[in-house]
Image 1 (cartoon, helix red, strand yellow):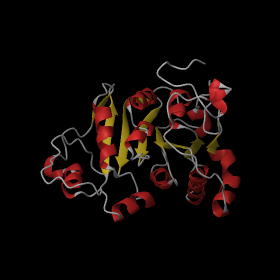
Image 2 (spheres, helix red, strand yellow):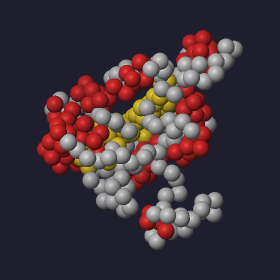
Image 3 (cartoon, helix red, strand yellow):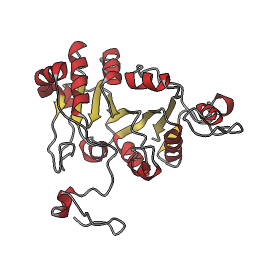
Image 4 (tube, helix red, strand yellow):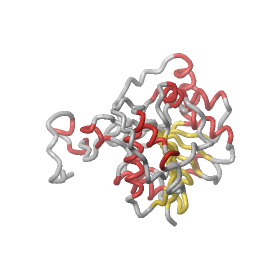
Amino acid sequence: MSIPPEHKMPASGRAVDDLSFYRTEPVSFVRRGNRLQGRRADAWERTSHKYIIEPPRDRSDTSVGEGYEFDQEGIYGRKAPLIVEIGSGLGEAMAFAASEHRDMDFLAVEVYLPGLAALMVRVENNELDNVRAVQANAPEALDSMLPAASAQEIWIFFSDPWHKIRHHKRRLIKDSFVEKLERVLVPGGIVRLATDWSNYAEQMRDVFGASDGFINLHAGERSGEDSNLTKVRRFGLEKDEKDPGFIDGRGGWAPRFEGRTLTGFEGKALKAGRLIFDLAYRRVS
């Protein structure tokens, strides 16, 4: 493996001795505890062999080994539209959607084991046969694990906003990631996004707006006085300085996605006074 000239040689960790452990792109997550207890541990023991996909690992327990490809028909035992949720959290949104649409297949891509175990609890409680999950770094899953033109929709709800400017490079939604989404979606497939932070919402809108592979399903909508961005800036809702004269003349925000149940995370954001930004883009055929 060679390191691009714009990147520095690794100075610490396993990559010093083995460059196969070196990542040229920073990951969008920080590892947390993987310990399972109580109902989650019990559900994991009972269900993980059936519902958790275990690809070969190259570098870590979130990597996807080269050459592995997701066989949807073999795994679910049928042909059906596939919905992929990246960053499924505690599985609330996926379990709700899967119970409402049992004629569709759902795949959760999540790095946190306790979150996947929480999803398994919901899978059991709702007797869901149309859900599978994988503990994986999303860019790797999109690069090789998921076949080209295999997903009908990809959902990314409330991914880490990485507030500090020096950490913006860790945000999931950026130019290189949009290309991966385009590869996996069927022609005409949809990406649905949601965030409770206006700065990240603007970045999402800019990144997809610069892509030739996607069109905004709600271009120009919810602009001006109807824009949550206008409200956030004018009234300083994110504890920034108020800008009374600000107006969002661009818009492009989607209505709240009806298929997204109100999760605990979103509920906390609303209780804290933050506004939600939804976006929806269609892959150009």
